[in-house]
Image 1: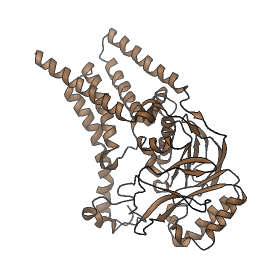
Image 2: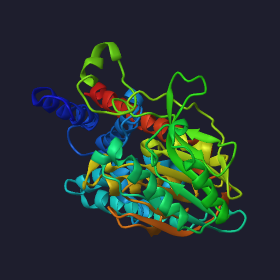
Image 3: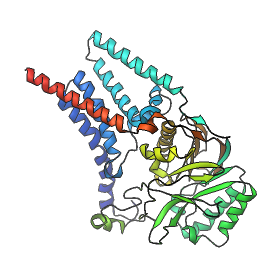
Image 4: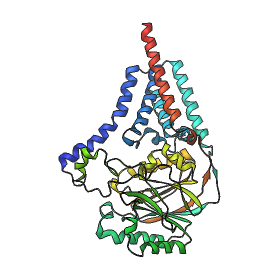
Amino acid sequence: MAGLPAWIAAPLVLLLPAYLALYPGLASWLACRIDPRPGVRWLLAFPAAWELGEWLRGWVMTGFPWGAAGYSQITESPLAGYAPLGGIHLVNYLVALSAAALAMLARAGMRQRIGILIAAALAWGSGVWLRDIEWTTPAGKPITVALAQGNIAQELKWSPENLENSLLTYYRQVAMTRADLMILPETALPLFLDDLPSGYLSMMRGEASRAGMALASGIPRRTDDGRGYLNSVVALSDPKMPYYAKDHLVPFGEFVPLPGLIGWIYQHMDMPLSGFTRGGADQPPLMLAGQKVAFNVCYEDSFGEELIGPASRAGMLANVSNLAWFGKSEAMSQHLQLSQARSLETGRYMLRATNNGMTAIIRPDGEISAVAAPFTAQVLTGFAQSRQGLTPYMRVGNLPVVLGCGALLLLALLLGWRRRGQH
């Protein structure tokens, strides 16, 4: 952690995984308390407790849902077919149920094994059938899209000495691009909107106009009252410059929870723009190239239920991100899976514009249409099309899965009490 002495940084690095480990740990403990041996009650309890733990992990303290078990099934597994029905949380439950069923096979009798195998074949076979269902339908004609990837190193991104290079990188990418819609990544322009050099915005707008191209970019902007600032995506090609502002902020990264208690830590850290203001719920989509585009910023696409409203008002989704913070880790691939899951859940294209990867065009079935090589400066081009209609998940959200798991857990408890009463 930049700027912090090692004796403070080391415990903080360990604190988050220790906290996140509480949820699967408590779920496993609860299932074993209900029945320590794999059996019917344990089969009811373990998957339900696991999924409820995953749901709570994505909700408590604004949520840390990254890395849920269900994402391991996106998009090759038959279980991915359940995402449009109940979202990633239904897939989470089915993964835990499958694991529990495998554990039971080792102890079950022949009749139970046959029953488990038949049930598994039905569940996984149904997933194959569900994958072939087209839950939404095309609306209008396909458009050409261009997604910029500037590949600006994180240690240079906010450096005043590198400002000119960053601005020129994206100007040149805009100038060389011909598409209906072009999107630049999160904070691609590392200045407040009203602090851009004189003439830069009109140059960008002029290049977009000559290409007949709608242009949107991630850029910080001040709130209308000037008292705060927003992590926003601005439609630069529109003279009115409408914008989307990130609403689900990253705790400890974009805002400081409990500032009176831990604010002193941030005084020792090099974290630019760590006090963003929330953009607010129910923001309208941006109209770009004749399409209603619902934007989300960085890890907002971790929260499937929060994207239901924006997706229902739009024809396609777009995510802008900067994952340079994570270096050459698995974070890029994992974040790509998050976006693939959101496409599956909503039946919409997802356009991902990132600083250094993974920039991609994702189809409504969650499959990748095109992807840029990470850690390269390039513009990814391809086609996308607005979609209309609602998937079952968009109609019901997470509630049926959460209530269903709660009911299964309660049933397992009741069966345990009944058995103890008989003895």
